[in-house]
Length: 68
Image (cartoon, rainbow, N blue to C red; front, side, top):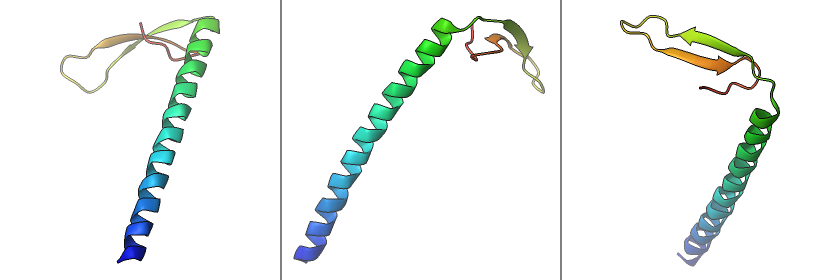
C-alpha cells in the first residue's frame, strides 16, 4: 500500500511539473505570436464561410493570420 501511495504522489508531482511547463510554453507562444503580428507587413484578405445558410465574412492577414 505504501508503494502505491508513493507512486501516486510521484505521478501527481510529475503532473503538476508538466502542467507548469506547458503553461510556460503557452506564454512563450503568445509572446512570439505578438512579435510576429507586430512585425508583419499585413496583406488583408476577405474570406467568407462556405456551406452555411448565413455565412460570416472575415478579414485576415495572409502572412500572420491576424483577424480584424
